[in-house]
Amino acid sequence: VAALAFMTRFPQGLLFAGILAILLYRQWKEALRFALAFILGVLPYFIVNALVYGNLFLPFISGVEHQNNAHFSVIDGSLVSYVYNTAYYPIELFKDNPLLILSLLGVFFVWRSKRSWLLLVPALFVVYFSLILNKQVRMALVFIPYVALLAAYGITAVWSRIRELPTPHRYGAMTVMTVCLVLGGMMALSTAAMQYSWRADGVSELHTEFYDFFEDKAVDGYVLTTNPIPVAYSDARFIPFYNNMDDAVSIFKRQGEKAAYVVYMPDFYPCLGDGVC
Image (cartoon, rainbow, N blue to C red; front, side, top):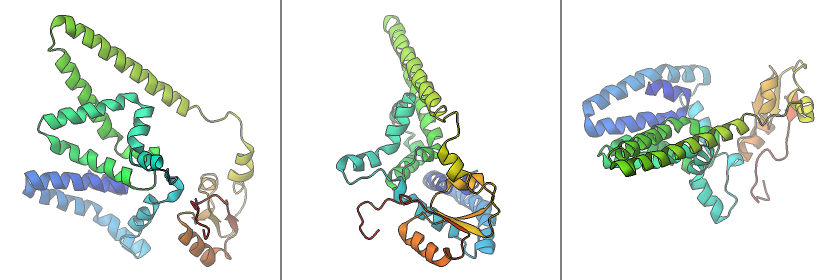
């Protein structure tokens, strides 16, 4: 399962690392079996990389570059932005779904139960995604299941302790907790409804003039692009050159003259005050 997860999304390699570390600490023989199964699972993928790209690690190298894509950075040089960069995912997840705040209770109760090793895998994901420069809420899809499980555990742990309270206090605490859960759920549903109904009913001018530009054109060759969106509206071959400035200049010099079209947007990459950029 860890091998399949890794090949689906490379950061899931942290799942393998976390489970391997836990097994090495608790049952080293099982750790060896687990590592061997993982290697056998991903071996065909590496073989395909070698045959198709001539490089076992090319997809991983490209992925490493993407994690530092400054276009999706939230840092603007201020102290507040650096703090926000570090706490980006807790802030955004708790804002979208207040019930996930209860994952902090889950962490507390798991730690107290002397099974703190269970926190290693979710901690690896949160730390990794908090440290990289590229910040996008969609990336949290990788570790939201762990956060949700911790929130659920926190809820059940608190509820079981409430049930042990004396009768007068028990029903009051149950009522308060139920109201909080219902309100939190309603807030999460409201946020989801707003997110999924943001699209305009009509077709914008940007859509017809830009996104659909290649839809009915027979492109002879390839298109260099600084924007990925037209790819979704055409079968033409698109070559991106927006990962970073060095790559953009190199790709354009190498392939710009032979491109059938070049899609250029001046703000495709943030220069952050760099005059040369």
